[in-house]
Amino acid sequence: MIRLKFVDHYQGFVPETDRLFTFLKRYFPVVLVEESPDFIIYSSWGGTHLDYNCPKIFYTGENHRPNFFLCDYALGFDFIDRPNYLRVPLYSILWYYDFSTLLFPKHLETIQQNPKSKFCCFVASNYGADERNKIFKKLSSYALVDSGGRVLNNVGGPVPDKIEFMRPYKFCIAYENSSYPGYVTEKIMDCFIAGCIPIYWGSPCIEKDFNPKRIVNRHNFASDEAMIQRIRELNENEEAYKDFIKQPIFNGNQLTEYFDQERLRIFFEQVFEGPKTTRSIGVKKSIGLGIRQTKIWESKIKRKIGGFERVWY
Image (tube, rainbow, N blue to C red; front, side, top):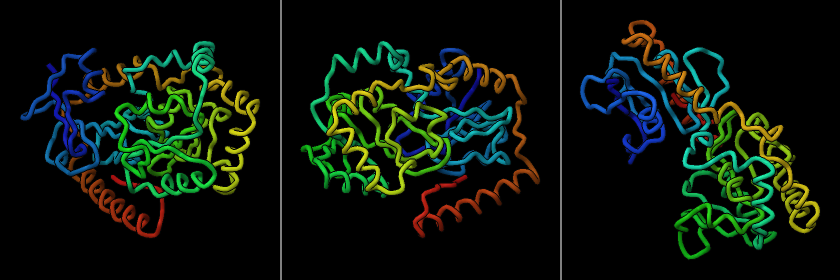
């Protein structure tokens, strides 16, 4: 058996139901333990991982960077080319959904069978995403934007089913909590599943993940007002809207490598067959701790002066 322990994850994290652990159970003889783990799978919400000498795997759904002086392996959003790292954007591990239905012609048929009756929606639970809140208020000055989340709610309370709530809308605000190259979560994928046009801000290279012609991308406009003008054109011109929504979601109408579960299985096969002790010891660990503290302070300073890049270790 391969003994795993998850540490330093967000409050309320449940390892037994985590997407990664349920994936690993399908392919490997893994068990969760409290004592003497073979591998630590940790995130960026604490320092408990520093107390262990077994191999450590950094795993995050946040806009955080792996510190390779402290981890032996990492899963993240960044475009990093090294053998002990795998890019696993959060949207690609929504394994409850059949991604093949987002390919044409199936997805186009679904859109045609479910005509839109409302303008735009917004579903958010993080009050601290200033860019997202700002565009909601600006776009609302043009037309009503229905907010079904905890933030700026105007529909009588949080909705029980996000995707079903989104389905009647032409557009959905899909701003990330922060912006960084490669940082792409489930927010834009939820739009595609619901058949909405995403109004997006986050990764400035989103075209590496999805077809840019199917996204209203704030990074492509000089101002919020210029983007809102484009949204108005699509909303008020039915032919322009239809031409836009007919664009394939994925470049070349092909799923990217990030949806390939075999890719993730092979990565963990190499991890579990690798060294049984951490390489983060001695001078290497000391350097890693220094980098970690520096980056934490750097992140705090950036947020205080209004920066958006959350560079945490």
